[in-house]
Length: 445
Image (cartoon, rainbow, N blue to C red; front, side, top):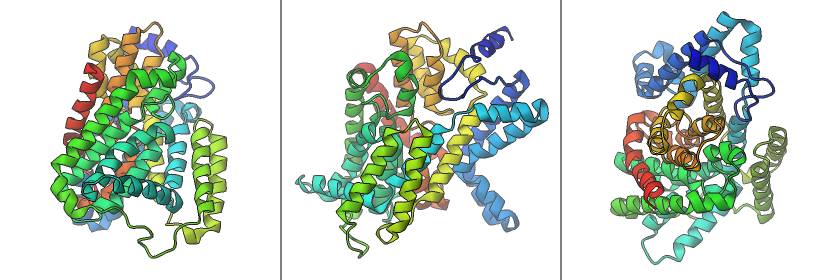
């Protein structure tokens, strides 16, 4: 209890990611309940196929079972349970104060960037760039396209942010690969490599990867430092992962994967002026990624433009983006009461242990939360700081909750898997090899 009292005192200081204004400290009982509910949420994440099965065997309550079978709804559901307990144990004022103390910038940003990045004009310019790159390589176009989507698009995340890169890569893979009758093995291998490469591919800069962003200002890490310390190593791992998977599945990729044909839906291309406007909105939202009034204002303006030129749009991915935002908001609420056990666990490790510990812990919590907890502790060695962030980003593809952009890719790709869901165990197994490559790159290079 003494250790918890010290943590409670430390948590009364102002925080930039998970709090606003005054720190609200839940009671020890609520923290313990929060840890238990967090564990239940993790188990629930690995049990979504059971709920989908119940939806078919018990049609009377199929709607409820389908809701509980949505991976993106899991943490929102258990966060609601936590708040019911908090209202009952500490009262309405304490419960609402805790909710108000959370910072929901990340869920709001991911919602906005997903919708804009998934529009037809943005996809058109991205696909045109990808097609041009594929044409200059004198090899079978299917494997080359696959390599570009798994390698260069994740690295692009260092500049347009990881959620935007995830959305673009997942949408293009959905149309070019998952729409074909490819093997389940290829589907899982692809999503495993995609999640890992997105997680490490955003480390070339100091503003694109959530776990880096949480510490960059506090530890004074700028883009040149990131590129020298993490970026080039991450780029090597990204290229190795993409190349190895491409070689492993080259026959199936040659058979099924084709570059998306220009104007394949029969509609004329989007006018260049409208493409430029959409790119400007995307850039504006990225520029103001940490200022919700600014990027939400731009997003609302964008919705007006998208409605005015609806004939040049595909249906906006509002449902998918809302589910992802709900997932991340639930993680923010539920994760806010995990500090009491996570921070001592991390701080009890040396630099080597924290690298492997952070990589493992990302499987059960958001990697940005891990690095954020490290940023609260003064006097850490530079070696410890680098090891913490390297481990956090290396393990960011192991589960859907490991990295903020993962739910976005999950929402876009899971309808093409059996029963409309990506099994967490299958994702974990598929991500182990690329995660190992990433860890070796950060440790040995």
